[in-house]
Structure formats: structure tokens, C-alpha cells
Amino acid sequence: MKPFRKRFKKVTVNGFRFHCVINEFFRNESVSFRVYPHNTKTTFFEVFFSWEESWYYNLNLPDTCSTLIKYAIENGWVYNQEKQQMSIRQGDFLRKLIELPD
Image (tube, rainbow, N blue to C red):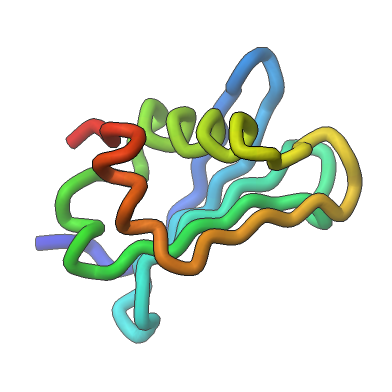
């Protein structure tokens, strides 16, 4: 059974620390993954997954968090500047694109 809660992770990618927030609260329409650089709350990357798709992988694993952060950086997210926000409203395509681990 999938737990329904908000979780927090700290991950280091390329020597830079990030703070991840995974929201799997059952009242939400989707599962959200949001990541902030350790030094600011105005810059973030967020992606939303459907509940059905979120059963295929564990967003709480450090490898999965790192993979999503690297994808965002490679696709234009500037994490080391203030007020740089990137959002993907329907991220189900990412499972196959970046091969998220189970």
C-alpha cells in the first residue's frame, strides 16, 4: 500500500545541495515533486505525476531525486540564480524518457 504523506529529502547533485519535497497526499489530484536549492526558496523545479504513473517508481529514493534534478538542469533550469522556476504539469512521460528506477 502506498503511504499518503509529504516527505522531505536532502540530495547532493554535482556537489550542490538540494531540498526535495514529495507530496503524496491523497486529496491532491496528482503526486508532486518539488526541489529547491539549499540556499533559497524562490528558485525551484516542480513536476506533477498522475497517481497511476507514480506507482511505477519511488520518488523518495535519492537516485530518483538526483535523476529528476539532472533532467531539469539539462533542460534549462538555472538553480543557482534567484527566482528561476521551472514546472512540468504532466510529468508522466519522464518515466520512460529518463528511465526512473523502480
